Image 1 (cartoon, rainbow, N blue to C red):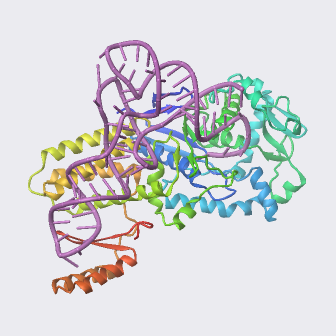
Image 2 (spheres, rainbow, N blue to C red):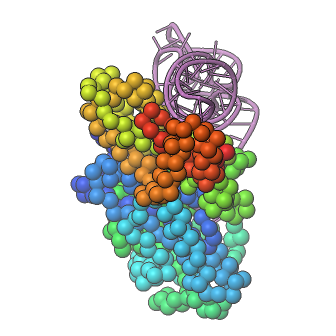
Length: 475
RNA sequence: GGCCACGUAGCCAAGUGGUAAGGCAGAGGUCUGCAAAACCUCCAUCCCCAGUUCGAUUCUGGGCGUGGCCUCCA
């Protein structure tokens, strides 16, 4: 099994090999906590989650760093309007971010550094860049001198000419040597003091520019060279390009060996979802609309490949919910069915086939959608075998192992409410008595009552089963 | 204007130089006290045109369409 990942730097799927055997250093661009994360943001974050899970499945020890940007122009603006400090303004959104992460079952990263807690590291790096003439001070601001870094543009494949053509920004706003030079440090304004957004530095009091935090914090937690750096495609330019310039100029080492970029989520109209454009949907919105967070998780990581654009729609979300339901139903059935005497050779072969194919799909640039196609194919065949009572002990063991492997990525199968309400069991028993007495009216009434409370009952030859209805799938 | 993706059934979507996974939705059926679940059957010549090839949805060129980046942005 060799893992291949699509590296933006080379534009091809390359065999992944970390610098240090068995260990992966990964940095991923996290949220700017000026608002709730929207589903598009979450897609990128969930992509990081998939990467880290698969690395771990592949046997690597992963050190994953995901930053929280808690200072930038938007935060400054908002805090000003709210009449608070940036720290106070950001707090609820940072908390909301972690709540969203939890309800979507992100696996926690090892570090979540915040920009404002790493000012000294940034100041150090900026000082180095100034000493080396990679940066210059202009009227209290500090800029990175792009002409000092010839490789600039290698990641996004933009050349200087293209940059100039695209430079439609108000260029006279700053004292930059060149329009494409970017800010490392911004001079403090009087308002910044009130917002708690100014720090001392040898080159003058001020606040950090956006890009420097990632360079400084990744160095602090992961060293000069990262194995993997990931983010959304919109971060490729200029953010990641600037990170490379800063880090490589300062450290004289390759910054990141593999760059992974996930595609956008578009809204119903097919356009990119973005906070600044206004029309965006948060996880809270979707949950309020009746979608299960795990259906959303499934939709975002398993419905389409991470490098394909995805359009958010109720129908697609519903489909994802059904798929999760089907998988859970199946996993549950395998678990609770007593194995037959003998194993079924055909089922054994199929399971092994799917298991191999699934691994290969994931190793091929994390093609989870393809892997799921195989899994659902097996679900059907295995259900047939279960119907015919052909699942033997070995079959069962391998099936369960496969489901565990799949859930190592998906994480939608494990239940989060282990202790089943005793009351439900009691009502089921009561309904069974009613059925035996052929009092179907009473039996149906109990089933209806439970359904209204979000619990479905199913009669099977192995007895009555109950399950929680997925939100939104209630009818 | 520059650079770059994508266009597969009602919807979502994977994929391959040799006549297209999977899921949702829909139709019919088996099973069942009813229902649910499960299973079975049905449901696409892969945007258009030209070229390369024995053969292209898959390669090349052109066209049309959609979208992204070039500016804060996952």
